[in-house]
Image (cartoon, rainbow, N blue to C red; front, side, top):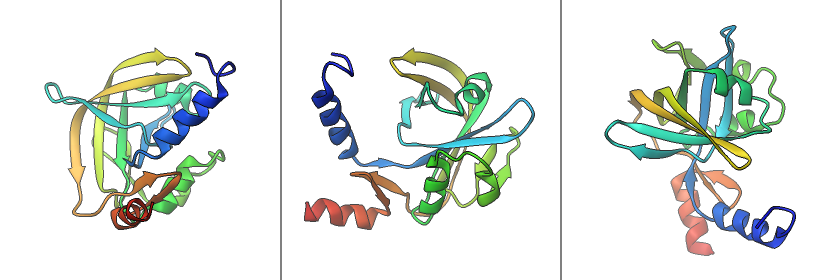
Length: 172
């Protein structure tokens, strides 16, 4: 069924997916000129243990699409519970100076990573798959950094720490 022919199904799909708690990530890379690029993503998931593969998806209409399609590497930054402001910065349609508003570091793989993130996965892109109105990018994990923190979660169009999400689940 297509988007125009079944708006009710799309609404239900969005409601169901939004009611499924996920982590919040900012995926980053660099342009050919070396400028950092990033966007908030909640479609991040593990794919394989051998080899270590992860995936995430990007909308074909994204202003950052060409940079991620051209890049050979990307980093997935799982945001910490205290990084909601970073989530909103990288989710904004205003893509100007996102990294100027965020503390970040260049890695040995020349990837920009968000300082203070719960975890960071530095990846070599191994595949990109066209899937409907998105592309799925698959990366082989080259390095993992994890902090002793709580992750930021997304649930019912809101973000927050585990305790806040658990309270929402209990109260709903």
